Structure formats: C-alpha cells, structure tokens
Length: 257
Length: 303
Image (cartoon, rainbow over all chains, first blue to last red; front, side, top):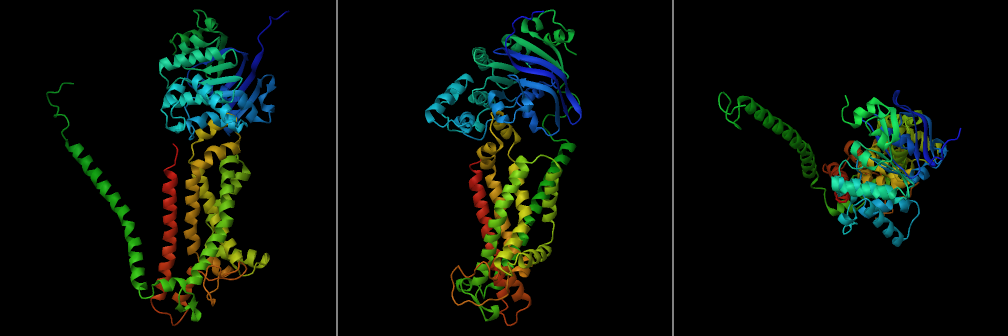
C-alpha cells in the first residue's frame, strides 16, 4: 500500500491523556500538526483546548497536580525527553488566553525573550521589536511611547503585546489561545492577515471560540468536546453540510445542546 | 410595571431603605472608632514616657557613656551595642531568609521536603525568645566556642528573626501575579531569568519592608541576648562608634533598661524612662524609614 506523500509533521500527538488530580480532562487525543499549516482547534468550554496547547510546550509542568500520559512529539522529539525545556518553549510561540503585559516597558516586553536568549545589539533588538509589534498590529499605537509600561496598556493592546512577545523569540510554531477575545473586529482582521502571511515561515495552531474565525483562517480544523477529539479534517469538510460526525455539524452550525 | 397605582414614587426612601442606611452609618462609625482607638495607646505611651523622662533627656545623655555602674552618665555605649547586635544579626538573617524564601516560593515543588521546611519555619517562629536564648547559649557560646559575645548574641537574634523574614518575603513574592511568571516561561525564560527580570523587581519593596520591620523587633529583645552576649555594664573612656570588638560582650538598650529599672540602686527616677524613650525613638525611626522606602518603591510599582 502506498501512502500519499504527506506534508512533514511538526507536532505529533499520540493517545495524549491528561488528568488534574484524578479528573481526566483529555481522554486520549491523537492528532498531527503539519508544517506550515494553520490548524484551528474549536470546541466549547471545558473541552481541553488550552490544556492541549499547554502539553505542547510543557507549560503543563507548572501545574503540580497535572498527570500526562501518551506522547507529544515536536519535530520528532518526545517533549518529555527534552531536558532544556526553555529551548522547546522558544521554538513554540505561545499566546495565552488572558492578555498579560509584563510590568516592563513596551519595548522590554518584546525584547525580553531575545535578550534572555543572548541578543544584545541595540540595533538588532530595535529591528526585532518593531517587526514583532507591526505583525501584532500594535506598532502604530505605541511607536511613540515604547518606554511606557506594557502593563498599563488597555486589555486589547495588552493582548496584541502578548502576540508580539510570542513572536519575539522567532518561534517555528505559533500557538494562539483565544488571541482575539479583547480585540476589535478590524484589528482582528489585520492580525488574521498577518497569520496568513506567517504561514510561509511557521506553523500556526490556534484555539478559538469564534468558529467563523476558524472557517476564515484554518487549513484544517479539529473539534474537541469534553476532552475527546471528535473530528479533525480540512476546514471545508468540517464546516460542510456533512462533516464526519453529527456533533461537529451541530456545533459549527450553532445548534448545540 | 406602571408608575402609577400602589408604587411609591421613585428614589424615595422606604422604611427598609432607611433601616439599611442607619445600619450602614452605625457600622462605619463603629469600625472607624476602633481604628481611631489604635492611636490612643501609642500616643499615651509616648506622652507618659516623655513626661517622666524629661529631667534626664538631653543630647548629652544620648552621646555620653554610662558611668558609675550605669546609674550615672548617658546611654551611648548601650545604643551602639544595640546597633551592633541589630546590624550583625540582620547581615546573617536577611540574606539567608530572603534566599530561602525565593527558593520556597519560586522553585520548590509541593513535596515532603518543602512541607518539612515550611513546617520548620512556622514552628521556629513560634518558639519563645527565652528558648532561643538558651539555644544560643548551648550552640554558639559553648558548642561553637564563641563565648558570651556580640557574635553569639547576633546569631541567636538571627535565628529568631529568620522565620519571620522568610514568611514576609514569601508573602511579598506571592503577591506577584502568577500570570507574569507564566508569560516569562512561555517565551522560554528560565526560572532565574524570570525571578531576576520580573519577580524580584516587583516584590523588592515588600521584601525590604519585611526585613526592616525585623530591626525593631531585634532592637527590643532582651531575653535571647542577656544569656548570650550582653553585659549589664561596661566602662569606657572614649566615645565614638567603634566601641566593641565582635568577640566582646556589649551593652544593649533593652538590657540596660531592664537592669536600671529593676536591679540598680541610686539611679535618677527619670533614668529608666529616658532609656525607654531612646529605645522607642530608635524603633520608630526605623519604622519611619521603612514607610518612606515603601512609599518610594510603591510609586515605582508597575501594574
């Protein structure tokens, strides 16, 4: 049997189970993320979307009662065998669902990661900071006050600052967890355009509650429900009149419940 | 709902609303009174002490050494002794306490070791100071052969203040939101980079306040130091600040006050009050410094 030439896999998740203090929240998820695609993960609250992302960059480690089984491989390497977890986290840009402006200047919010990774040249940092802020559609609003505190920005601006920070360490994979909750539709559209451009240089995994956003943006869409992967497939198929599973149809059409 | 009929006019107080307003006022006054009542003892203590001490108080009293077994002269060598003890003990307890707290709050996972350390901290804080004094005698004076000296007394005080510094530092660190740490870890910063870059700069005011408040506690303690390195009287010819070597015994304000008030004969009746005023002034001065520092650092607080 000849399998068709598939795109190289950036992330391979195999039978991933996760429990918090005995309560299992992911019941054996198996999915792959292909190189240079945008994969959207949709699903109602409590379906394990954020937990799934945290397993990818091992931020799950900081939750003491979390127990993980199964494997998550990033570029073929089991993440749990990685000793230098900082390296893994630099490879994966992570935008957390709640906007966090670090109590540093706007400039330092973005320059923090590259500086910690050893970039010291002022000119180099300036270029990097501007590029990241532009990509996060924040540059025009803050370019004249880069030295003011990032934690004093409005919620929507902090969210875009979070995106700029996630891009600052030049990740190969970008995970966005509800990146547009506090952002207006026009700015959201600008960021979505940027994500489409970024696809040529990185792989994007986005968790979203806006199913239409997944439809607009994603190459493939995964539907999670109560810790189970109900369906994953090309976005057109998931949003078609006949997805593989009835629940998917109900959810994306807003008929759920 | 229709605005006519049996409904009362809008925004006019019903009996229930009036009762609520009354209860609100009563509560506010009651709590306010309790808060104001706190001032009374402080003002009373200070006023009483100053009035009683007035005949003895002068600049001369502050800067001359005690003479004649402590009942004449001033208070300088006791004041210097107290400063020595406080500075030496904080030099030991502040670094150890702060670093231990950083470990406990930032690195330690919740396991038996961490729980044991935390339990030790809590229990150490509850040990009476006289017991600390006895421990100091056994450990520093005899076992480590430091003798009755400033070193022994300072180390005893350090052990006594350590758990409180650890607790206050942990509290200051825990006040930095977890989201800041997660944001740093998410971009691949190590724990230490996160601590240095974000956690410490935003908790330093709380940490320093906690440490400085221990100064007043250390300055006032008598029990632990009278067993380990403080003498009731020592004659000096000269003044200056470098009166003692660390291996010598020293005088201290708290001990001096205790001795003059209860043991010595022939002291002026205002003398113990004057010593108390100096001790209190020292403590209040340190508290004032900590308040100023906190206000200064808070004005730089970043979220």
